[in-house]
Image (cartoon, rainbow, N blue to C red):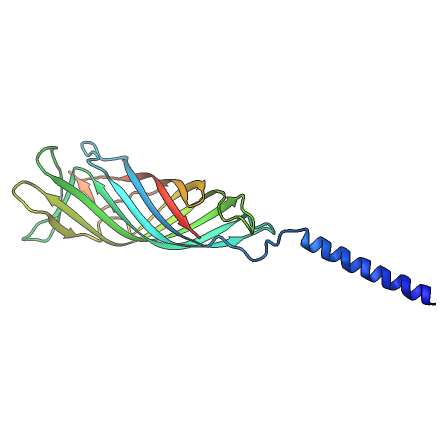
Length: 232
């Protein structure tokens, strides 16, 4: 009888030791996320412009926001991201969008290079990124390689035209109804640690159908190349 109880006790202790060994031999992935605050600076290449309209100067975009990490596997190196942020785009080109002071009617004019100092259109929007995420992270390593790709939806909350000549100081005109209310495209960014390369391809026309020259709609699409900083 004593031998039987001693044998059972030995089996229980062996099973307990084996379980502890198995637990400590594995990495605990159950508690880490890559929720991130991001900052993005990009150069804008304007595409599909109306004949005679061309890009002038350094068109650029600045954005920042927060992305929530949603892992889908045990190791947590695959998942989705859902975020919210703010973006300000500045387009330098020679299509002047102004307003008639007497009638209040919006006017469109293709400018001749050299006849003006500055002509820009600024769009401000709220952005909502949705992305698929791959990274070679672990629970102990906070610097790792990542490649994330997704869909970016933007909602226009403000827009204005900036125009300046040698005789006219900078003229600011609020024109929120001119750009498309909803703007969207696909993007990808990849990098290591905090630094990432970023590319965005716009899928819809940035101008509403109101923007027309000589009765013909003047479209504008964008392609962005930049740097994204992400902080855990």
